[in-house]
Each structure stands twice: as structure tokens, then as C-alpha cells.
Amino acid sequence: TEARDTRRLREIENLLLNAEEKSPSAETRRRLGVLYLLQRKLPEAVRELEAAAKLGGGDARIHNDLGSAYFETAKVSSQEKRYEALGRALEEFTRATELDAGSPEALFNRSLTLQELGLRREAKESWTRYLQKDSSSQWAEEARKNLARLEEAGARLRTNEPELSADVLVRHCVRLLL
Image (cartoon, rainbow, N blue to C red; front, side):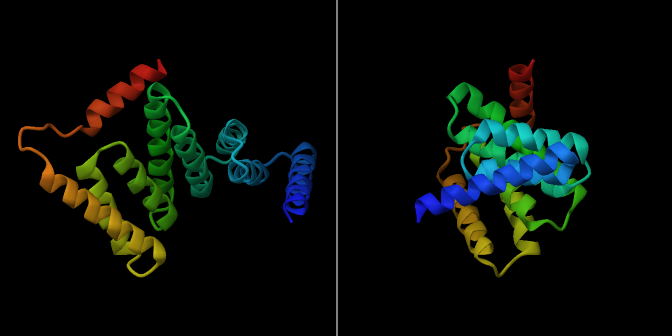
């Protein structure tokens, strides 16, 4: 039942909080952050995952999870804050793929973020790279659908409509952060 699930999640949270108090570690903070992410407690998820990244910055899973927290935050943010959160998500997913080039999760999430940002060319390239690594999973099917949507959208564009470049987006995000 729902009450039992809620009680179990609270028990897991308490176990993780106790473990963190006794022996702080990047892995415990990551697990706590993922728990909060699954519960849609986004500020708490970001806080814990940022702390995990400071403790264990070389772990691609931490950066992928932090990127996911930022991506989910973007979904519930105002338009002004949305691009800031998506920019941070992109940074984290990119860092995760740099740390572990074989991580399909990070590459999938990076591709999805590029698409969400409207960076069609970059998203198409990223989806193509993803499909080179994973061509048969359910995620691969989703990647093919996203790639097809991007190609379809590109075909409908007027030739004089400029495409948002990554450089323009980065400058915009930097201004928001300062």
C-alpha cells in the first residue's frame, strides 16, 4: 500500500542520514540525493548531489544524477530559471560523459537536454552517438523517436530561421549565473 511505501522510504532516508552522520561519503550523499529525486524533493536532491560531487567529483554516476536533478528542476521552474537549470544539467551530463564515455545513461540524458534546449544540431549528433553505443534497448527506441522528431522539425524550418547555437546559450546561462 501507499502508506507502507511511504514508511519504507522514510526508513531508507533515516538509514542514509544516520550513515552520513557517522561516516560522510560521496556514495551515501549520492544515494540520499537519488532518494530525494525519486520523491520529487528537488531542492534536497540538488543539495545532496552537489555535496556528493564535492566529495567524489570523479564519479560519473554522481554527475549524471546531479544533472537529472537539475533537469527535473527545470521542468518545474519559471522560464527565467528553466534555462539556468537546463544549462547546469547539460554541464553535469557532459562531465559524466567525460568521466565515463561508456555511460549510456549520461549520453542519453545529455542528448535529451540538448534537445530540450532547442540545440537541434548538437542534439542530433548526440542522439546519433548514443545509438552507436546502444541500438537495441527501449532507450534506443526512444532515442530513435527523438532523432526523428528533430529531423522532422528541421525539415519544417524556414531557411532564414537561425538555429540557437551552443555559444549563445552558454553566454546566456553565464549571465544568469553571475
